[in-house]
Length: 160
Image 1 (cartoon, rainbow, N blue to C red):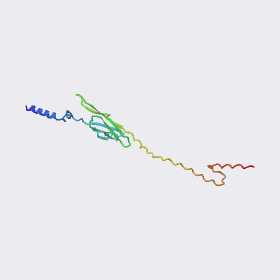
Image 2 (image 1 turned 120 degrees about the vertical axis):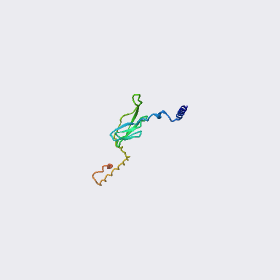
Image 3 (image 1 turned 180 degrees about the vertical axis):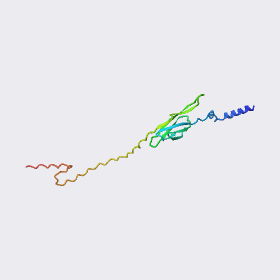
Image 4 (image 1 turned 90 degrees about the horizontal axis):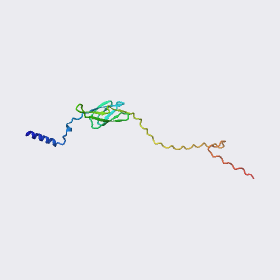
């Protein structure tokens, strides 16, 4: 009778614990290895899950339920971000469960950053140039001033 009582008490204590679930008995999935590469090599690659390294390299990340991204940065090159899918194969009696990433390896081709855009200064309108004054023609010069108005015609002599 004692055994029945102990089993009943143990069953009630487990049933009363709301935080207990069968999920807590499952082992945590092992971290997955992700190969990171870039052209040119030497870029800083950082995953959205935290770990990062200089390419080419390999990082260990916890197996996420959804995908993640990897951002590649290198001075004088435009940054690049690559989306990574996580594929889980549950396995069966003959094969173990596995987790893979796509693409594998995660690769980014970094493009050179163009020269910084030129800053155009505001253009000021040019002031119109004043026409230069023509040198005064010497009085009595046989040549008239080219810009001067033509002399008025003298009235014809009066005839009586």
